[in-house]
Image (cartoon, rainbow over all chains, first blue to last red; front, top):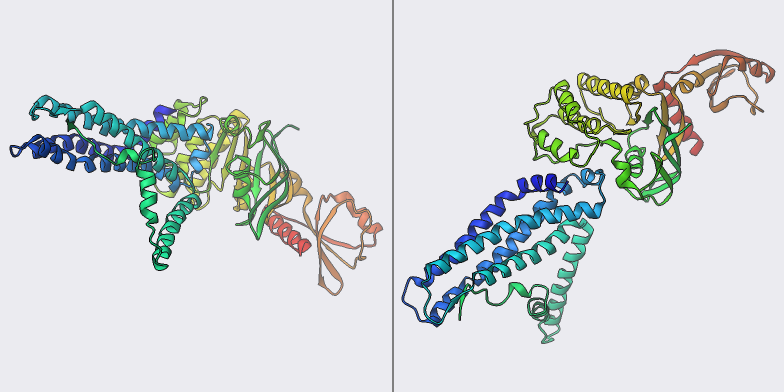
Length: 215
Length: 298
């Protein structure tokens, strides 16, 4: 059963997954190319590498999002009638869908690892700096897994649940606007953002430095 | 009589204005049960409740001896389901749909699936999204049959199909039933189609079961009687008087259920002059039963 689900889901996810794999390979390579263009001090080299942090986190989030959406999009279109009529416990079916999607995230993760290993093999790193291909790859795998899990849960839920989530986001925006209108000096959105993106916030893995080459 | 499907007091509220209300339904094992009803009667909702796709608000459902929806996984392994609308993933090909489907059904018969594909004239490399409505219907029927189910649940399987495709599908269905002695629940509003293949019928209207009985009994026992003047009340009638209406000054027209010719004596003793007994075909009976049921509920 898992094999059959994986085969079908791969068909829906392979395009974005392979694109993410290619991008995952290119980001580390391009980051090194950019940093090597001029003779830089170690600090400048690290600074250039840091500019590419956002690329890894965006790629992790994007890959998680697209693979999660692909997992459920076709079931949504058929109002889940096919899935519900299969002789398998529903939690098990959802778990198989989740597992299949999680497998596909290994492709972009492998891309990041391959790109990082190429950079490590080039060995053109200023003295005092080190290459961390495995650490970066593990972080990417974890981040894409977190993004995938969140988007999978939202995507698997009903329109009503999605509405509730959008409602909560809307309520925060409304609250922030209301505070501003009442001249209350409190940045609600920043507080929420700090709560989520700072350790041990649920999305803290996306923030901070994603360094392939560091001290 | 063992039952393949039984519901007792089944309730499910669909909307504020529509609900399945205390539905008692009994589908004998080995029968071809025609589930009749006008559009919007609640047939699809009942089918979804039977298969555990919806959760009932009350009552009991037993399918193939197991209670639903509690045991949906083991029951669905023995049920072939063809829904009202295509439910398969349109972006995959027929052969991919077959590969996916067979992974879930241990009783899958690939050789027969191949035979059916040939019989239906299906090119299995084609994508489902590129198929016509009739071809989609054939694919769904193929999947439902090749899993060798004990119970087939078909929700308007031939609705909107041309007569040739309809005949192909029904022929495959009847072959299967004959070979396997499976039970079939087939819903439709195409009354003539069911008349040819069903041995039981159940009539649903506004979420209520109007009647269910063997087809033969329905055909033989449901009559329109044209009578002369008759008393307002009929005591101890051996038949069920479903409706009566005046036709002209001296006559009435009755719709009766459970009629047989011996009952003429009763009419004589009740002072009713019987002028004519009119046979009803399934469609006439369907319409008359609906009309009388609606009159009784107004």
